[in-house]
Image 1 (cartoon, rainbow, N blue to C red):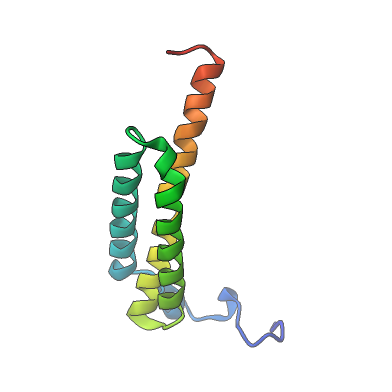
Image 2 (spheres, rainbow, N blue to C red; image 1 turned 90 degrees about the vertical axis):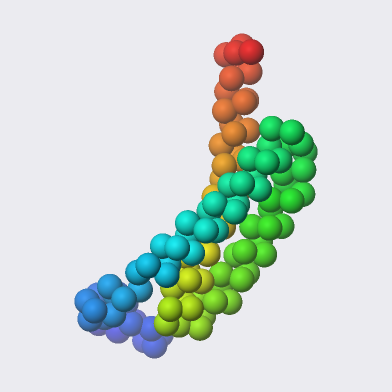
Length: 111
């Protein structure tokens, strides 16, 4: 049943259309974006942790905006855009996880 908003739900789409949303272009975009984001995060985190929010968050925001713009195009470029949107989360999430591990380590008196 249609919701009236003009965008069919995934249940209404043929299987070929849904399967076409995922492919090698999206996978490569996720891997490359994640690699660049992780290298940037782990280059700064051990040596200058105070620079992580100043550098990694704006880089993730730029990647997210770029990915959103690309995802609106459709086709292979849209798949790349959705891959960039997925991959841009890796740097900030890694930094948050590292901070939580350090806080937990200090809470149990680890060196």
